Figure 1 (cartoon, helix red, strand yellow):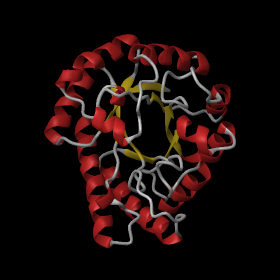
Figure 2 (cartoon, one colour; figure 1 turned 30 degrees about the vertical axis):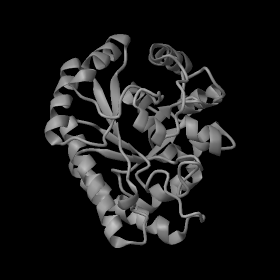
Figure 3 (spheres, one colour; figure 1 turned 135 degrees about the vertical axis):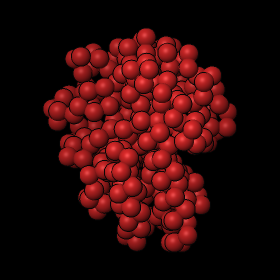
Figure 4 (spheres, one colour; figure 1 turned 90 degrees about the vertical axis):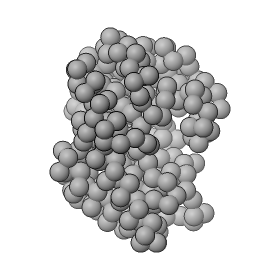
Length: 279
């Protein structure tokens, strides 16, 4: 099992400017970092990957799809644009030496039709994700789509829903991600939700209900940690917390205030995970 820290707490585009933060996370005791891929190219990510390798840190990534890249769209051109975007992320992830690309890969973030999901939308999404998974296999990367809460997504909100997507894609380079923040909103039971997705679980986000320091809010953490141990999960446990440091990004995800001091998030968050998992 590895513990990571998502750098979205500080930035939505990691550059050399953020190396001191990465170095500090290494000293704090993290096994790796997670970063958002929204811009950049293979050269940029290759250089960053070399720095992480020198530190002995692993890396995972998050990406998303814009409105004109929705792979669940009825428009074939938009679906193809989404697939092209996912391939772009996979190419950059390979240069970075990332082992996982997670996020709402199944559809565009915060895009709503004002109707419930349709069978056709889910079929289009699965079709494109299978093509993306085939491409990811060549880069030795696993895609881990994420179910989001109802205020950010309508296509996949629960682990029961997400399981149908993974089984429809049916490819070894596509697994599933579990996020404690979204599940706190959408699931009846964190434990049951984890049990549901356990056969496909490849990535976990440790995120408090208010996106602050893990353990400081209302998530049923005993259920989370107990169940993760019960299903013998041994992948990444990555803290995802947000701040207002990048106003444009914060506004895009409806973050209007800072929930916890940054240092508290990553220092106490690491201690909390280790204590909860008994490591």
